[in-house]
Amino acid sequence: MKKGLLWLFFIAVLISKTIPAMAADTMPVSNATVDYSCLVTVPGGTFTQTDGINSFSHTISTFMIGKYQVTYELWHCVYQWAVINGYAFQNAGTEGSEGTAGAAPTAKKYKPVTTVNWRDVIVWCNALSKKAGLSAVYFSDAGFTTPIKSSVNGAYGNSVNTTPGSFDDPFVNWKADGYRLPTEGEYQYAASYKSGPGWAPYACAGGAATDCMDETAAALNACYSANCSIAQTVGGKIPNALGIYDMSENVWEWCWDWYGNYPAISETNYKGPVSGSSRVKRGGSYFSGAGYVELGGRGSDFPYDTYDDYGFRFVRSN
Image (cartoon, rainbow, N blue to C red; front, side, top):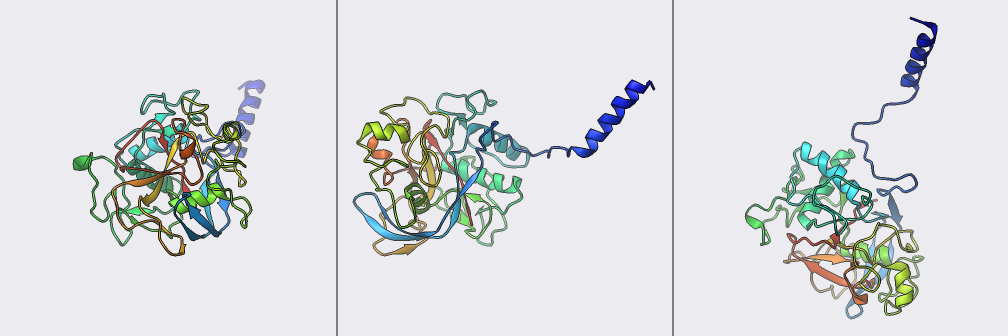
């Protein structure tokens, strides 16, 4: 072998031994400057959870929440891994509000995933947990031995499966270290947080200092019907005090709770009514009026419904 080729071979061997191989399941979830999968720690405390009409004192334990809405790139990466590993989904997800369901990510990959229903999201969270080496949260049995791995409608396309352990009413291991949906209380708590003793008013958008009816101020913190017509790249507006983006705008976000009346007494880590027909969604969207992007704004839909302004973000218990 010529000396020049021998030298090149030696360098190649040296590099191969000093640079570790990339893990096969590395997730492409960030661009050059932003990690779209990162979590923000939310300090525990007590606040008044309110929609402007009804309210109760709610104590929340410390937890971690996604800094951004789940991007299509992150969704698609985990989705592909999940399908290969025995998970099944009714919906493949869409890139923002104008993408093609299940298509490979494009230059718009940092827009939120949309057209995913509540069932899809809990299965995806279980898959992400498994992929990351964490414990699943949603199960079909009370002993937490069989994680839910399919959101395929079957006989329940346009009806709610009320069977305990079904994909509409799973058993939940709240002590697991894996990924899950936020409760409605966790969502509003994180969105409203300013300093612990101080909380943003329910009528503001996340991060804003004035009422949502002040469109000039709201536009700095929210992508909604007054200034948007399609879903935008996540993280494009001013974050709230914890550095969390888009909690009052861009796309609606699924929460854990069945939709229902607030409790009449103080609660700790309240998880909503024990049963219902629709699941809570929070935050409003590019299609929403000012009243829906308020921190106290509530919405709901059936767990099988999908729209191009429905997305989500994940949390983990601390």
